[in-house]
Amino acid sequence: MRVLGIDPGTVRLGYGVIDDVGGVMHLIACGVLSVSSKSPMESRLSRLYTELSHIVTRYQPEEVAIEEPFVAANARTAVAVGRAQTVAMLAAANHGLPVYRYLPAQVKQQVTAYGGSDKEQVQQMVRLLLGLTEPPCPTDASDALAIAICHLHKRRLLKMAYKGEL
Image 1 (cartoon, rainbow, N blue to C red):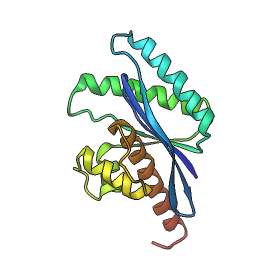
Image 2: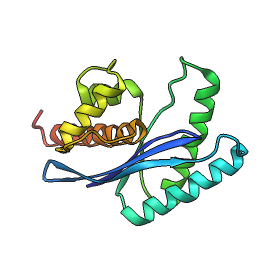
Image 3: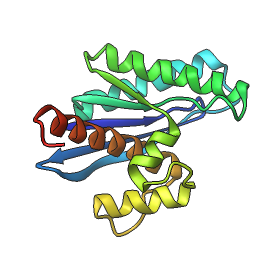
């Protein structure tokens, strides 16, 4: 199972691609799509869509996991993140891929076993879970990998429940 995780943003959008082969996760790729905050919003969204479409074509994920915006912190930021999330969903849908969405606390809970973890804790757990020598940088990329890991963990639990092993 190959999963593309996306940490949406309209200036910095993190992505991470992970393969799960026999219950062992392998890093395929990760990075950040950056666009100028001075560009008009529609130009930024168009560029993010185009670049995400290239990533989907290049890495051929089977599913896409996207983080939901956290609304309580700042409504304006949440709206911007929601726009980037919509672009990511559109890129996935136009490639026929199913999309799964997770709240930040769900991702942290699945990856670190604590829903209030900070970014450094998430980075370190991503490093450990993927068997990396260094934590993935920047945090937008490690967050995207954490989202993919969260999705893979959820899939495993559902598979176990479906088979009656839980």
